[in-house]
Image (tube, rainbow, N blue to C red; front, side):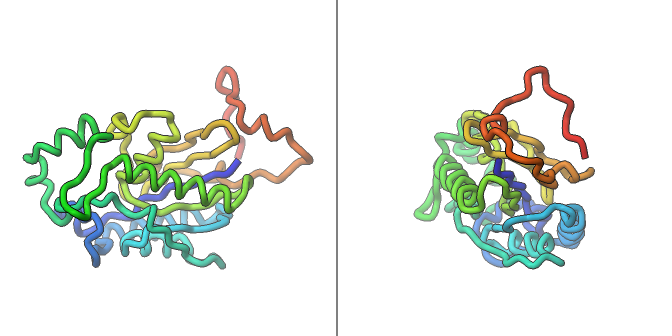
Length: 233
């Protein structure tokens, strides 16, 4: 099975300022965000990564660079992992946006939400492109790979909703904090969501086990009846 670690970028000046950054250029990690990404880089150091792929926006590039410290891997960029295109909402304070009629749609019926202006997209489009990116990188890297995708809160929530088999209208029930990791393993028949919004603790379970002969591929897709004994580190 292919495992993707979904890493949200560290905290930014826009996050603390209550502004919807979107694709605004130049949004940087703040001091707390820099400390967060340094910590997550150290935390993930034991995990062998086949690739590190990031949104093109500066905050994700900086976060991914922290994970790559000490690794002989290039930083790869995929625009499809970029932030939702919020159109005319970009750069506006959240305290203003909550008064917009579209805010209620985003909260209650996000699959119908299309952000205003020529640069705006629908959240359904955001989900479709992000899930396509993850699936294509899975196929490119192979069934035994563990790789990392560094992206944004709404994008990661949309990918997780798809992996959980949830309609996009339920994705606001998922929380993805700055510098948190969420983990999904993709098999031939279904994804398994292993972690959501994980901001601490051991990551030894993400290190692939040593191969012990040939295994039946179909068993990777089977859920353990009764829940199983968990992962032994």
